Structure formats: C-alpha cells, structure tokens
Length: 323
Ligand SMILES: NC(=O)c1ccc[n+]([C@@H]2O[C@H](COP(=O)([O-])OP(=O)(O)OC[C@H]3O[C@@H](n4cnc5c(N)ncnc54)[C@H](OP(=O)(O)O)[C@@H]3O)[C@@H](O)[C@H]2O)c1
Image (cartoon, rainbow, N blue to C red; front, top):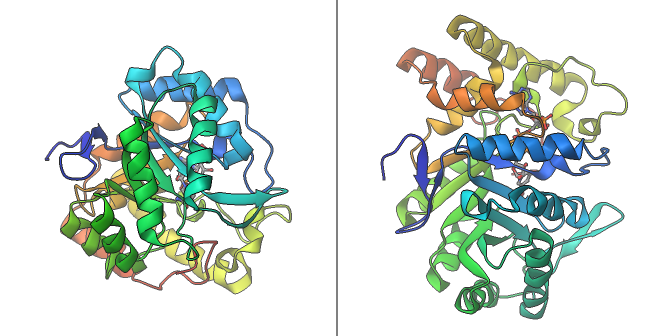
C-alpha cells in the first residue's frame, strides 16, 4: 500500500500511521524518574489529533505504569488509537532478569494488560524477545488462541532473527516486526529487513536516534549520572569517534534547514515504505519537529553521504542492543 502518511502492517493487515509514538519514556526507564504525567497524556492526545495513532507500550514499562497511562489517555478515544503492547520480559527491582513466554504465562499477562489499558482487545500483541525454553509454535500459537478469544487483533514480534521471523510467520501470519534500526545500527539490513520485506511484514523501527547519539545534543564525556555511560558506545574514545560522525549529520541538517533528529528519523523512513519510525516523545514540543521529519527526502548525494559516513560498524561500541 503506497501512502506516505500510513503504513499497512502485514498482508491485509491494519492501516496505521507511518510515524509511531513510543510511550516507553513516559515511565521510569533505566532508573530515570517518571516524566510529568499530564504532559505525557497531552502528548498522546496531540499525537492522536495529528493522526499519529500507533501507540507503543509494554506491560513491563514502568512495571505497568505505561499501560495505565496509555489507558487514561485513550479513555473516550479508543477508536482513534492503535495499541501495540509488548510482554514477556520479567524484571526485578527495575532490572531485566529473563523472559517468561510459557502459554500459561501469556494467558495470564494479557488479562492484566487489558485491565490496565481499560480495553477489550489489544491491536498488536508481541513478545518483547523470544524465550528459547519455549517452542516458537507454542508462543505464537498461544497468541493466535487469544485472537480467537477476541483479546488480540494481530501478532507482532520484537528483536528476533530472520530465522525466528520465518518460523513465527509459518505458525501464524506476523503483522509487524519491532526492531532497533538507525544510521548507527544497520546490521539488520543484510538478513532481517529483506526477510520482513519478502514476507510482507511491517517493520516498526525504534531507537532511530540511537539512545540520543544522533540528536546532535551530546558532548563528550557524558554527565556522570547519565545511564548511557553503561554502554560502550558512549564511553571514552568511542564517544569521541562517534560524535565526529554525528558532526557530518549535524552539518547536513544545517545545510537542509532541519535538525539532526529529523535527518535520523527521515533516513529510517526512507529505507522502505514497509518501515515505520517509532519515536519516543513524552512532551508535546517534540511532535511538530518529529512529524515534519516524515516529509524530508534526500538527494542521491545526501543519501550517499549518510550511508557512507554511517556505514555498517562505523559507529563504535554497543548499547543494550548488541548485534
Ligand atoms: N522492542 C524493543 O526492544 C524496544 C526497545 C526500546 C524501545 N522500544 C520502543 O520504541 C520507542 C522508541 O525507542 P527509544 O526511546 O529507545 O528511542 P528514540 O525514539 O530514539 O528516543 C530516544 C530519545 O530521543 C528523544 N527525542 C525524541 N525526539 C527528539 C528530538 N526531536 N530532539 C531531541 N531528542 C528527541 C526522546 O526524548 P523525550 O522523551 O524527552 O521527548 C528520547 O528520550 C520506545 O518508546 C518504545 O516504545 C522498543
């Protein structure tokens, strides 16, 4: 389906906004404090008003806080929103300690999510990672059973390999693949993206700014209390090297009269009409800038500058998305 403001998730799947709103950072993540709830809810409302209907949350974001918040925001506006929920990650004291995708666990998790969100059906339900101790058939088969029960509309997957994607799709048609993708994180271009495209699966691409690296706002070294200090990408010489790459992005943005973040989002969008940039925004002031990024296109020369400066592995060090 060719439509610059919409994207179809999977064969005959739902048509949703091409830009997605990530709600993760509206809750406490990586030890951060919870942002102002009133502003977060106002951000969701303004996004819906703008036609950005794809809202992404997870039952473990803020230990249920995110779903409660999204539930409050969509009260009275259920039909305006498309709700995507991740599940299965188990946390202890804010730290991930494993996955639980046993069928009994999935059948339990869904009810809590529906209650917190205050809805009858989740539009896109997806395990946040795979759990090697449970066969893919059982994981996807259980979600397919939830579709029959009317609790789920479509199935997604997140951060999986091309082989896992093919396997999952053979059990039940997968509508969307949620995956970290940016100028700084291009390893999925060799196998996973072609597999999604071939299978007709929509790609929901998150971390377009690579933990803020591509916003052009960072200076080395980061503040001592910055959570990104835990990731090698933001440490010592790696950060200095990486920020030199970002200087090219910043210059290109300045030449085009836009911001580095807009370039980072637009580049993801330009990688294919089956790809949705999913961007975290927890304040309304982000919406005009990030929405306008969806109208940016590149000349062949600009695209060449970006793809050569940010060739695969040009950015040194990793984040929690070790590829
Ligand atoms: N499947 C998975 O494993 C997985 C993992 C992580 C995230 N996700 C989903 O993907 C969404 C996006 O991921 P993400 O948060 O990692 O990456 P992101 O969208 O690149 O966001 C990172 C940061 O960029 C900031 N930002 C947004 N617009 C900006 C702008 N115009 N200028 C400067 N900074 C800007 C946001 O700040 P503000 O919040 O202050 O606006 C946010 O803190 C999440 O909300 C979540 O729903 C999925």
